[in-house]
Length: 249
Length: 316
Image 1 (cartoon, rainbow over the protein chains, first blue to last red):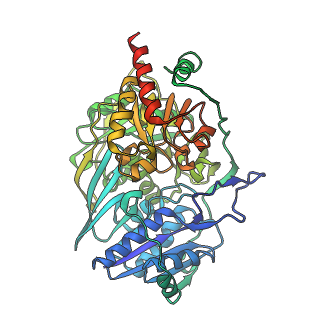
Image 2 (cartoon, rainbow over the protein chains, first blue to last red):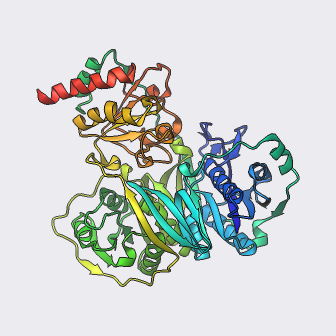
Image 3 (cartoon, rainbow over the protein chains, first blue to last red):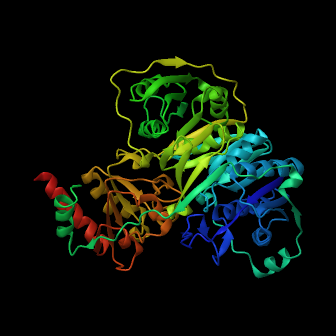
């Protein structure tokens, strides 16, 4: 079985990203970048399937600037076999990402595609669902557990109110939620080995996909920040203030 | 402009997120239709027909739609799409699952998790865990969007019910089948719509403490229980109670954070609450920067004391 994993290079989730003063975008100068945490979970799951003998090849793909190759290198160090960078300096919206990934999937013919449920920069939560739609495949979004069979994959999904398990005919697409696994740190020998693994490079034009955005960003601003209130000295004072001042009790 | 709202419901009951999505649609201007897709879901359709601003309810009632799997529901919505200028769903897990599939099949770039409608094609949405708000204009002829329910008031009840029309159901694409669901059963209010939420963090230290320390306070207040990601990751509570960027985004009247440090990902899920109370023994915890009332105390002493005080008030 062949697995395709799509990963995105994003700002480190521990960084508080700020809007540019002119409202044209966000300030990413000198911000530490990393692999989208949900995509890390996707890579980990693919590697575990390979280690369990369920998969024999893991191809990892990223769409973005030259430095996205670093993100691919991280995935290779975790255990993916080869990388594909679809290089573009443009901001690529999820719909265009899905179109590029569709073309990649048609060339690579994976049995399963795994990606993170959302990227923590644009928080769109769309790419997996869109890719699955364009391929005409079934989708198992927000996955917390996978059971891979020969013809189908059982995906347990995190939904409002609990869990839902669906069975998807292969080939199928899965998006990873937080509890699917805990990603490993790549070991130094594996980081060294990853340097020798191949990364192929293409452009969106190679796949005939136009990446012109459909959404025009009119303004980017920071929401009004909530001001810190007061510290109360006791539970008694808290109850009194909640009742008399805030009127919520 | 005609807008189709995909209803969130549990077949026999309409979820309040639908009423909120209807009011978001109302801000775009135009005629609003609601699609209720499910199995044995006429009761939900009748409830939707009673919402103010709804002109027509489309009822798609079939066994193939019983668990609202993405593939058959998306096929249904795409089949109806030609009659609409905009398609909208609340950004529940169901809406987030189905709508991007619809958008891709219509070749539309979806706008996710809209928190404000500034015009028929102008929307605000949070990025970077809500640290930044983006205002976007859609150039697609048809708009597809999910809306954050907690950012919009619920549509009120109409004086007269809208008509309900049955729609034909396309063939199930057959790529997926439902296996089972395990839904948390709770007598407490649902986290998403609760007026008061009592939330616990890793400092609770065990699943038992959620039940013995937090639950009595929550039950006396008629509150829902929430949790930080750290508490969920530690296995103290199920993931559907997670409040934050990747969990539920809520805006109750009162949010009581107990032993939660206040990582930005958690704040993203609750900072729009009307009143925030933080109880934490670390005076430097970031949660105090957003709390209206902060109490620096050990939660294992303060929460039971708060429970006793609230229970005494309730009796008085």
